[in-house]
View 1 (cartoon, rainbow, N blue to C red):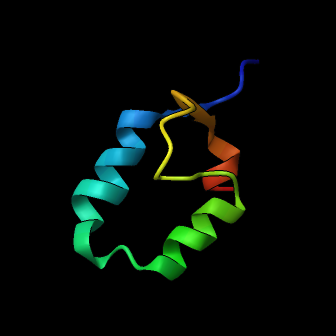
View 2 (view 1 turned 135 degrees about the vertical axis):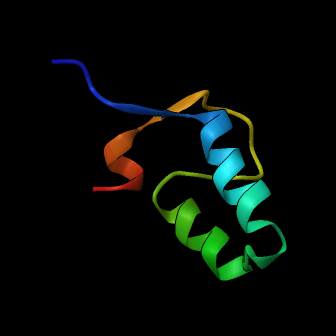
View 3 (view 1 turned 30 degrees about the vertical axis):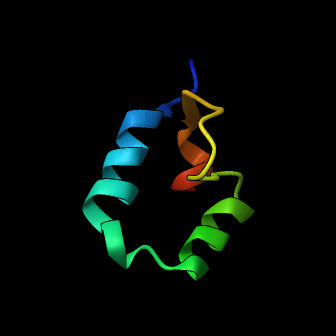
Length: 53
């Protein structure tokens, strides 16, 4: 069975567009701690389990 993934555009839509200005530095740090840096455009997709275990 293949691993479920979440595409970068979905992450950007959720965190950058929907949350927008309410995205606090603390939340960015928490996301970075699980390997999701919203300031970098490296990954096109991340494993689903990394965001929602």
